[in-house]
Image 1 (cartoon, rainbow, N blue to C red):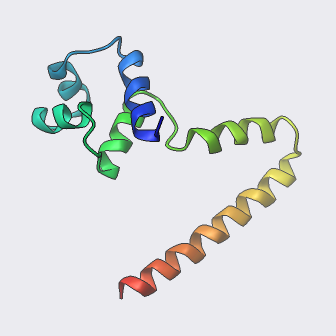
Image 2: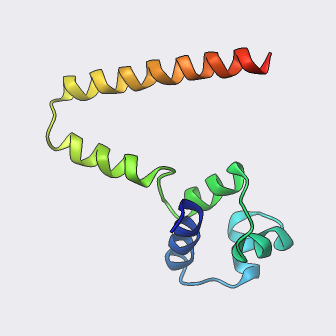
Length: 102
């Protein structure tokens, strides 16, 4: 199952399988757009984030579960080192993307 389907399923269970109108009210996304998403249409990133936020679901569940297991094994300083490394990788990625976009 792909991440979008997992997120929609989680959202639906979280809100006890709401109607189309209720999903629209909860998310603030247009009714026809919600209908297309629920029928398998591809979500925009902002829509994906909305569904995740409303259902208290992390954007990247696999990374979140790894984070939880790492926090039980590694020291605080080791976790800080990993976090700094990830931040540095993200900065490099943003720099490269900005260079491509220019």
